[in-house]
Length: 453
Image (cartoon, rainbow, N blue to C red):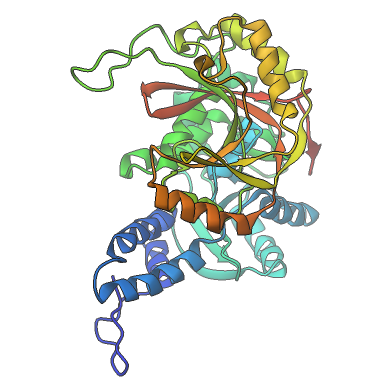
C-alpha cells in the first residue's frame, strides 16, 4: 500500500487513503473503512524507522492523519438533525449515535452518522436538499441489508460522512420480537406512525436524548438488530462497546452488575475478583491530542479519556440493587458542570496528565462515596490525597521518551473545554485489563430534553 514516488516515476503508486475508503464504501464495508485506515496507519508507524521507506511512510501517515482528523461529533449531529426537523423529515438516528441517544450520553467517538427514513422514497429528495444546503455532496450508493435495503451516501469537505438508509419496517418489527426483554418495555416510544406509514414504526422506535435535545432513534431490540453481526466480522472495539452498552441498557432495575465469581487472568496465575470503577468520561479532547495519546501508549479504545471518581470501587459481585440505588442518589445530588483542562502536569516521571483548575467538583463526589461506602478507599489508600486528572500516558504503556514527546506536543491543544453530565460504572468482569460499561448515572435530575419534532 506504500506509494514509492521518485522524481520522474510513479510506478508502484498505491491507492490513496481516500480511494481506499471509496473502494470500501462501494463494497458496503463503510463501517470498516475507518478501521482499515487505522490499521494502515499502525503498519506505517512500524515502517517509519526503516531506511528509505521511512520517508515515504511519514508522507503517507500525514495524509491519513488529515483524513482521520475529523469525527462526527454531537455538534454536527444536532446541526444536521435540526435542519431535517425544519423540513419535517421523518427520520430516526441509527448506528452508534442511535445507541448513545438511548444511553443519554456519548459513549465513543463516531466516524459517521446513520439516518434511517420512515419512508425512503418519499423523504430522500428532501434529505438530499437539506444535506446539500449544509455542504454535503452525494457519493455512489450501495445495496444494504435485510432490514436496511437501500443506502445513500453523503460527505462534506470536512470529513463528515452520513449514510441515509431505508428500513424494511415489517421485517424489522418481526425480527425485533426475538430480541425483546422485559426491560425493553420501559423505553419511551418515539411516536405513533404518521399517516400512510407502517404501523411497525412505533414498535421499533423510541426517544433518546443528547446534550439536552430529544431525538427519535430505534428501540433496544431494534438496536440489537442494527448492530447484529458486526462484532463477528472483526474485533473492532466499537462493536464490543456496543454490546456492552446494549447490555447495560437492557439490565433489569436492581439486577446485580455481575454474579459472584473469579476472573482468571492466565492459566497458573492466582484468580482475580472482578472490580469496579466510577468515572466521568470526556469526549471533547481534540482529535489530534486523542491520536497522539494513542501513538504514545494510551489506547482510548479501552477506556475513554476520563476523570476517575472512584477506583477501585467495590468488588463487582457486591454491586447490587441497594448499591445502585445509592449511587443514583449520590450523583443526582451533583448537577452537571462545565470545566477546563488547562494545565499539563506530571506524577513524578511516570504519568503525564491534564488537570482541571477546580478539582473540588470531582473530590466532593469521591467524598460522598466514601461516606456512603466505608469500605471504599481511593486507590486502596496508596496516596495521601486524590488529585482529579485525565491521564494522557503512563509508564506501563509508554517509554520515558514517548511521554516527554507527548507532553511537549500535547500543550499545543490546551485548554480543552469539557462538560460533566454522567458518571459511568465499569467493571473488568471479562479480563483484568478490559473494562465494560455497566451502568450510566446522570448528574442532577434526569433531563427530559427538548423535543425537536
